[in-house]
Image (cartoon, rainbow, N blue to C red; front, side, top):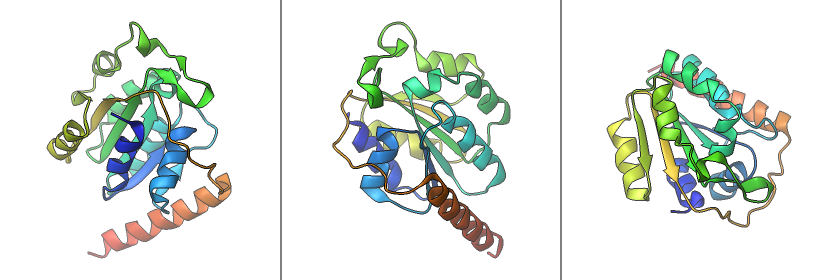
Length: 189
């Protein structure tokens, strides 16, 4: 399974998307740029926590795209996710067993570390491993109303995609506008 296919699948869903730095954000931007996407541009290891904060403050579904290398830098976030477990939070960890944005050096998941077991050990109840797009779709449908962590095993290689031409301030401002507009729309129903 290719990371870009996972990202295409997530980009088609209705909700807010928060993506980790490097190739995942660049691929999301190339596949489907939107004001509902928050691209992390320089804070490795924090996207799971940023997404959790957004999910705790919003009613809309929040999809967080993280990488194995990034989640390994902030394993404590898995315990915090288990503690809060908002029903509108979905963390998709793309496990390509490499630090893809810095040259494909192997992460610990290439050897002994199993992120499904780590997430479960932190107290998360709904953790699934997927190895195909069909399995990803089924899992997203089964757990659409509860906190879930999905470990999507993919190949190591990234698509050739351009650098995101937005500044961090541009990304923040347009995302905040989108969240504010969506919140008002949801509250008025």
